[in-house]
Image (cartoon, rainbow, N blue to C red; front, side, top):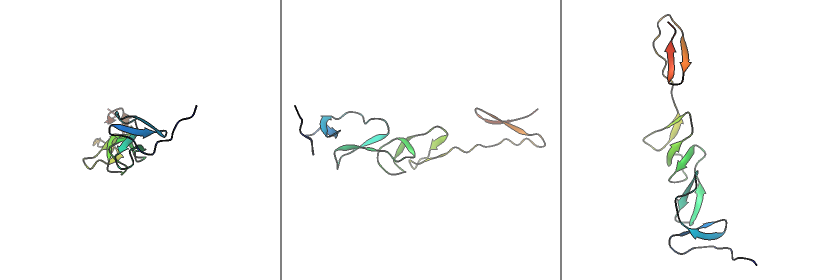
Length: 98
């Protein structure tokens, strides 16, 4: 028995794999596009998003931080002022050798 491929859905349903299914929270890494009535992939720089642009991120990959603009950028490591001593990496940045 076959099934019909959906091209549009009634309110509160969306197309996933060419079938109409109840609309819920979007799968991770996707957002709901009301124009196309489909879940679409977030920009590659986002883990979660509200749209397709690099400024639509709501959650970033590890090692990145979310700016107020909705953009994911690499976290900056701020080195401490160690004077003549060298710094060593830690989970929370860097520390100075004693």
